[in-house]
Image 1 (cartoon, rainbow, N blue to C red):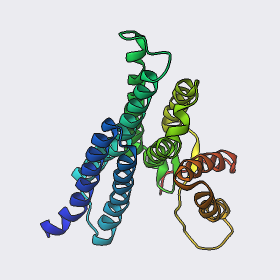
Image 2: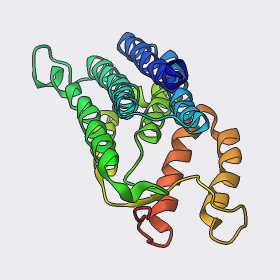
Image 3: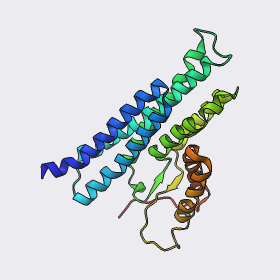
Length: 241
């Protein structure tokens, strides 16, 4: 029985290890490898919860371990990607004068890790998020940044204002993580169209977006998800009875 209980925790640890490896590649500036391991972490994050439900096992330590793994994979790893990208961008721009404020500027990226941790702590205590989310989920935020840097990094390096653009986007994503904006989850109580309109519209639009945009299409899908959530009828998730 103890072995069965540990199966979900083992999967969660694989998520944590994926986040550590992604962070390593992020600091090396090998962004495509970092993205691969963030995606791997997201897969493990999905299957640890599924394994716990299928096996009928759960534990307080599993919940805490899951949040810890998510902070690393979906908070620290994408923050490291943004940090390294900003640092490289500043070195290659006219802002680099050596020893000035510009060397400290990229550290703003780690605000994302802090806000991700805050979002995960709130999620653990917020019973309203059983069938939906309030604020942007950390895996979605991480995949947005990782795919954006991998898919458009070379182009962004050519823009003179890319540093300011990314910094503004960073502040927006930090706000979205802890905002009170209701966002839908891909959970179906029944498979009919009625009541699931927003989910089916989103799912049906994902394939053409990914086919057209490629890797950066992941970032476009996440942005589309946020926009759909904002435009959908404002029905705030309630706690299960």
